[in-house]
Amino acid sequence: MKLRAQPINCTLKGDATKASSTDAMIALLAKEFGALEVEVADPIRIAALNIAPGVSSDEGDGDEWPGVRTKILAADILIFGTPIWMGQPSSVAKRVLERMDAFLGETDKQGRMPSYSKVAVVAIVGNEDGAHHSFAEIAQSLNDTGWTLPAVAGCYWVGEAMGSVDFKDLKATPKKVAQTARMVAGNAAHLAGLLKAKPYPG
Image 1 (cartoon, helix red, strand yellow):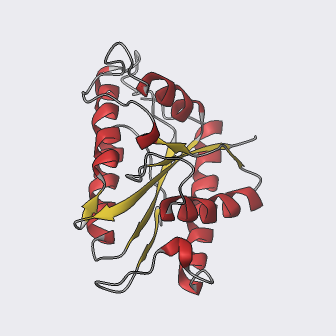
Image 2 (cartoon, helix red, strand yellow):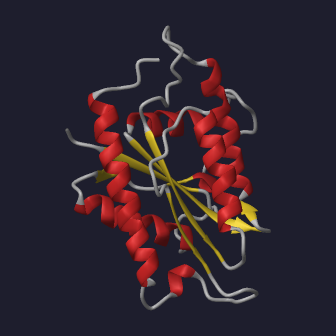
């Protein structure tokens, strides 16, 4: 069965033409997923869209969340990318998590949210401490809204404290980050294949 992954980039940079370290981490994971014959869609840069505040699936005129929702739910795997700001996931990432809260009220007759039997992994970058804290926040929210996280569901890179080097500017990917990306992709693809063949019964 062909699997498909949809990345979202929760950088604060709204201009999609500007380089993003979050895109660089997503690209690393996309490479590993591609090696496993998982089709990876183009990343969705959330800050470039009008994603209205709220906890419903459609907040009315001008809200572009419905289109994002359709794309992430059409995929088997969600790659959730975010930078760290002030030791936390970006405000854009939190906006996405808030909008997915609507899934709790969109269950089918078996009580399954639209995200059930779909897998999510997390890609995090930052120049300060906070990767574990950010992953914990995102993983809890993803689990609450119906996504399944595999073993080794997160890949992150954190630069030197108070440093100025970004992940996108590294001359080479650190060996441990590359190894982790390979494990994240492998486990996620394996789990997504199992769930696609035999979804949760609810």
